[in-house]
Image (cartoon, rainbow, N blue to C red; front, top):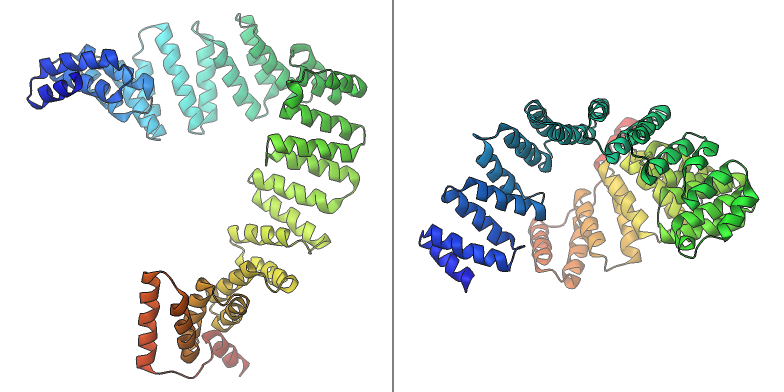
Length: 466
């Protein structure tokens, strides 16, 4: 009843009364965004900007991407607090994806900071905006300036180390995390970060000194050749850890190091069940097949690994080499053809669709692809040939029938087009499609039937022949 009363007061422009009733509703429903918006709006009407700001802050606690809250806070602080104005404007630009504008706003806010904690928070946000915008060097500069101040926390050190890791600047990453320890952040997260950097940089002996993570310890032991010790530790892990994906990658690594390749592949399959379609699955399989001397499966898995890493040119090359060894895998031929199409190599892709049709003359998808390809190069007779095969396989394939009818029209085989369209309207269920083809039939009937004529490409080729 209170909400209805508040809405009625507001409709009657009795804003004080409405504001009072909305407050009662807010006490009963503190997470109701609609009530918070009404309270913020009415507080502004009643010239209570501080109270309005409180309600819009509450909205942002519940929805950090709410543009209305940012706009209203900008209005509240535009003439009273330039720092807050630029912060809220920067946040609004950030959620809109306008990172360059957001960066500009936070640079202005940084120049207006009045105390250390405020400066640290603003610089931290600016560093992350640079990172999001792909301006890594500027982000690193901001992080380093940030870490010179007194208002720091471990996350700042970890983020900077992560950026150095991305650039493979491992010594800088280590230095950053060591600085964190010197500044009093001798925490598990920092030490595990140091271990991860050492392992990534190829120094597992040093990594093992810093980690308490049992799985990471086992990985280090495997890397430094303590195979039997690592296996013993693997077997003594808790049941909980033995259910984790990392457990199966380490078992696979153990079997790989022990030259037990089939067992390694079994572990990789178990990992794939827990982390399906991970690039690591294909990378591990490729390495195992390399060691087994199975070049075909190695190439296949390196190809799939590179697809997931978006290294499409490398993936194409791996698949091309795999097909040289074995071109009987139709799924692989389809994957390769699709990659070539995505890479704008449609002529090359068509060669593999031809291979598929030779191996499987009933393959409708390959026939469809070849029909579309022939149409794209103006070879309408070739298009007709593939579409006729499709219709022979399935006389009720509506798309194939429609496309074949159009192809007959392009080659002036109007009598065939008419016959085909008449069959089409007998089986089509969609009224809109029925109407379109019915109009085509009437047009062909009114124009009479024409003798079949050569396609444009055929005519051009004959002219060249003369």
